[in-house]
Image: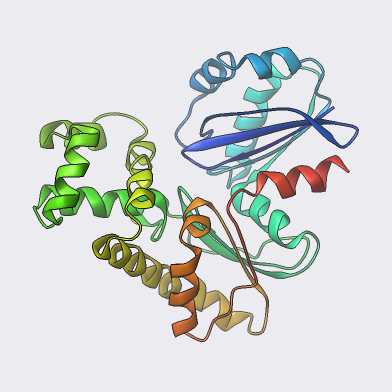
Length: 280
């Protein structure tokens, strides 16, 4: 029995397969070794009946997690998962590698992530080329759902959000300035809080303000992440993975087209391709 996990900072998706067929699946809050300690991860695992039921039967596990970008973080997460899945051989890599496998399999290409976080790298069919983009939700992640959430809240609290959107946002989330600032600056997992507003973007995707906000975010992503990688690897196919790219692929394609960039594929949920790759 094989388990495949793809986790951004907001959500972790689990698929369990036997003889190449999916037998169970679930989702849970994201598992990011930079933000989640051993205790919190084990608590989350113990809340999922599906994982409890199959924990002893899973023999191989392939985990792709945001934040698993160093040997120390990989070892920490592997050790934690081994405490729950005691009979499983566990492989942990970062979410960018999982995105590359999902989009390219064993082919080369440029892979971009636009999900709860953001990243971009060249994949040679086996390995990712090192980059300096993974700066997290405070210093980076331009174009991601947490970046969009940050821009939305900033517009709301500085009274620059159109009245109809402001009222809708306030009614839906009952926002209070002091509580918002406290949630971001004092409480843990601020990136998950910021990403939680992405549904508001999807629900209001036809509003001109939302479209401009998304377009501006994609412009920043293209200039900060994509163009430097394309410059180093011209002519390579370009693939995107993630919920932001998936939900707003029309706007993403329009922005990249301005720069003469053609996107080969956009995959909203890479877990399906990963399961196919590792379970067959």
